[in-house]
Amino acid sequence: MLIRLLRSHLRPYRRQLLWVVVLQALQATAGLYLPRLNARIIDQGVATGDTGYIWRTGGIMLAATLAQISLSIVAVYIGSKVAMAFGRDVRKDLFDRVTDFSAREVATLGAPSLITRITNDVQQVQMLVQMGLTMLIAAPITAVGGIIMALREDVGLSWLLFVSIPVLLLIVGNIIRQMVPEFQRMQDRIDNLNRVLREQITGMRVVRAFVREPNEAVRFAAANDDVTESALRSGRLMSFMFPTAVVMTNVASVAVVWFGSNRISTGDMQVGAMVAYISYLVQILMSVMMATFIGSLWPRASVSADRIEEVLDTASSVVVPEQPVTSTPLHATVQFVGASFGYPGAESDVLHDITFTCLPGQTTAIIGSTGSGKTTLLGLVPRLFDATSGAVLVNGVDVRDLDPVVLGESIGLVPQKPYLFSGTVASNLRYGRPDATDEEMWHALEVAQAADFVRAMPGGLETPIVQGGSNVSGGQRQRLAIARALVRRPQIYLFDDSFSALDVATDARLRAALKPETKDAAVLLVGQRVATISQADQILVLEDGRLVGVGTHTQLMASCPTYLEIVESQLQVDAA
Image 1 (cartoon, rainbow, N blue to C red):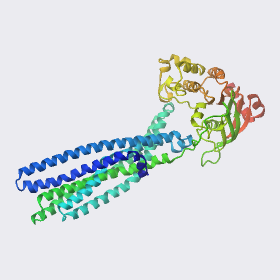
Image 2 (cartoon, rainbow, N blue to C red):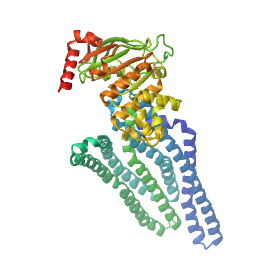
Image 3 (cartoon, rainbow, N blue to C red):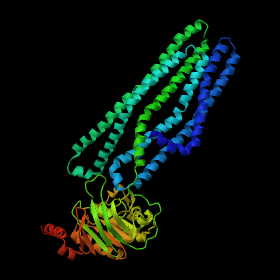
Image 4 (cartoon, helix red, strand yellow):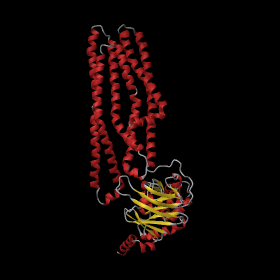
């Protein structure tokens, strides 16, 4: 998976990669030339007392060093730019893929895991790319070139190379083999840590209300300790790599001096050649050590690449049509034709054979017990997920054939849990329609019964809203979400239990103000309170995902036992 990910996302940067290879090859060549020049200074300059030769050769060495530094700087600069661009592209592709997911895929992969994959996992692979382009390319060139140059200096000591290098590679390979499963566990435990932390931050009010801070501290500590334990185990394994390389380099250098001095005493080798041989040996083993460092990054990057590719390979169950319909024969009409929905692997469907029609100017309310499928039914209209059988039609066209932009522009959704984005009141309202004027926003706020508390805020429309809208109350958050949908002025309004946080008086005023605004639109309204839905043109009663009653309030009171039971239970609660 890692090779596949690198190949697909580095392909656009082939030219830059070629430049990095060329520059790294040139700087490695310049580095390999230096020990040979040093040997000549010792053997032909120092040994003979030729000062002029020493100065001339020293000047060449200085020029080669400057060239090596310059080429290395440019290569690292280009390589770093490519690595950063690679990370940016992978994050973009992941973001695009995740935003195409339906609720089904997000639930399967998990929001904390998706966040980790887009951030931490991409960072691991990006680090491998950066280190590879700045260090790994030069390593094999230096190793191979160093072996050739060392053999040119003296063949008799070559057996030291063919002993030390395989031993080092064998030890390092065994360490890397043990690191792969450990990194897999680490990434999974980071997912779990993010999940626990996200739950605790999101549910902070509940934690404090039930005085569960000590218990949550224990939960977080356990997840944190798991990550720490994995990090320590992989760190211990990684800590063996560099000492092993250093020990092998020092032992090999001592061996060269030991055996090289014997060859010098017999006249088979010169002092300069031995010094050059030691330099080449150090270069070779250092290049192996650099490759070892990249090798230590490879296992974790490989695990991260698998997780990234899992997201990229996961197809959304909500598929964009190849030839989408961009014009519709009807206006403000929603039709369910035998629509059912079930999750993969579930024993039974959430919704069973739902059929009804909501016409322009008509309000269709949906009521039922908890878990009866009300929110799921509403989610089929904007294609938060697709029906597994049957069809859902918007303006006479199956939503699976409709252009997503056309579908989105036709719908104004107020979700069950209204969410506000960080910004201002105005920026949140313009999320419904970016070109909305101040007058249109104030009108939407008036209809949503939110104008009074927005005017009371210090900045009015420019009052800051924090992420999630946690600096306003639940009722204010609901009304701002309703105003956001009104600003859009869609053909179809979807209210998913959007009045639950409002008091009875505000609920009544809001519903009265909505009537003239939605007179030409189709309105689908999920409600829990009978008072909220009793005036609807038609009411759908759901029980265990099945449609057990359709009609007005009066008709259902006479014909639907389930609806009658809901009404009586609420009357008993009100009486109590």
